[in-house]
Image 1 (tube, rainbow, N blue to C red):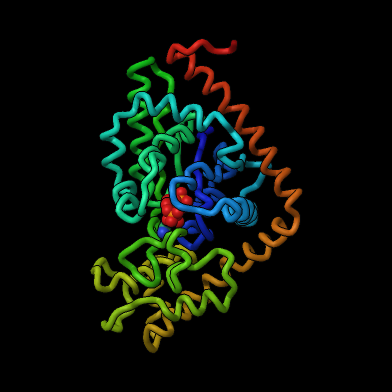
Image 2 (image 1 turned 30 degrees about the horizontal axis):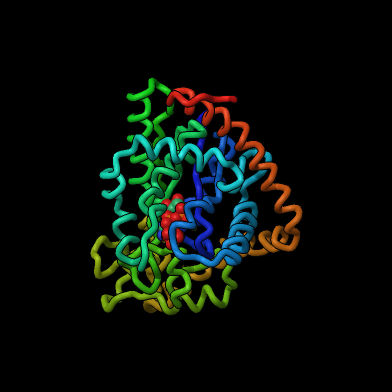
Length: 332
Ligand code: AQP
């Protein structure tokens, strides 16, 4: 059975991009594969944050993931910092990863210019991500388009380790959804919908937003002056393309069928309301189910503790083997 690893940072409110680009794939693959899903709280320390808010966001994200359909019977869902092997392995892989590989990462270059003060963690982010994946011998990593480069780097780091110390790590493959691999911001269809920008009015649709908020955000969505509802790669029509892609990802319809659904629309107002409607219906059960977990934090923490225990059973022996291969005196 193939093994899957994927993660998400508790950096803000989970949004429609996370749902379509990641969560849905995670849930759909649960029966065919062995799954490890991780709330990567250590990664989230690489951007400015407030400690109390982080704890709250971590629990909320766990509640959303269980509500979306991650089943503790089928998958292991855990919090990264609860499994110390991740941070320990990161030091080991840091020592074999050329710094030039990290400086080339697009996400590092983008975030580097936006942050006032940049910590080492931001540069090191993909090495920690490589550890997340490699400790579990994951064959597949379902991610949105933006994380593809990091998974490819994890492959390269695995290859370098195997070359230096003998065959040991499984080179992982990124698995990118065919539709909605990159949901764009509603306010600016040139940038991807992102948690850290989610506080910007009208940028993102939060998975837990109520129907009125969802409607308001779609009403404000940026479109164009062409007044033509069709898919297009033209950058000037990116807003309408984004709305249609969201509709397509949720309904599972083909492009022609989607365009036909809006053939009688009177304008972009109808398109926006049509998309809002199906998004509201898709997210409604998640919002209702999340409340159940959020209202019982003890039960939620117990589920997460069980997940961490299962993850440790896999990650700790792998770390020990890694240490041995690298010549450390293990088990004293
Ligand atoms: N806009 C998006 N469209 C499709 N997929 C997306 N993902 C993120 N944004 C989109 C996918 O969601 C998973 C979890 O993402 P992450 O928390 O690891 O970090 P990220 O990719 O950096 O996501 P954000 O929301 O933009 O967070 P911030 O603002 O904190 O950086 C990943 O599989 C990702 O591909």
